[in-house]
Image (cartoon, rainbow, N blue to C red; front, side):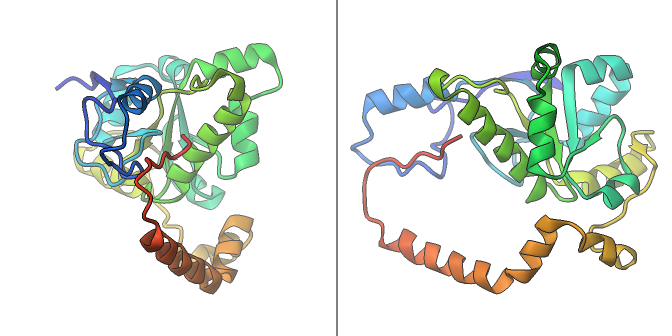
Length: 246
């Protein structure tokens, strides 16, 4: 199969996303609106059974990125794609996908995709963002959602238009990518290594990052909030469709 495979993601062609509560009251107008809003031509071959499903992005397998890196020159790749490594710097420096840029907080993300220089923005906005972290479960997807949220804010008068319509997540993250790269012996990691986030050698480095520190100190509170959220979801009986703002 070719790594390029155009796909259109619309309500008429796929299952109703999880965040839309289906009911007989879901009007044809809403269905038409969703199809119009979320009709995206995905240019890369997407993962059939991804770790995460989202209307904001699609997932791609490690092999797709490896094929791109093998097929395109460095300039061709970076002109078309923005490969974003969302891990912490010690992880990135210990081994990352070639041509990836390390961005692990929202401010740097916004600065990168929405630079103040107008010509630079035109150049960046032509690129297709691809995000990943260690497993592409939390940090990578969160950065993709953060970009879409910023995009929505900046295009609130042009809804549903966005600057970065086509986005991807590397399914199962760098760990899986590194293992596949080792198995097929391709030179796609730089350096050719992998450092886990919880590597004991870097515990002190890990606690330097606000995101991780806040997660560690608010674990009990987060669990309590999740329980409250689940209770609220169980109590909700409305038949109206619920849409995630993406």
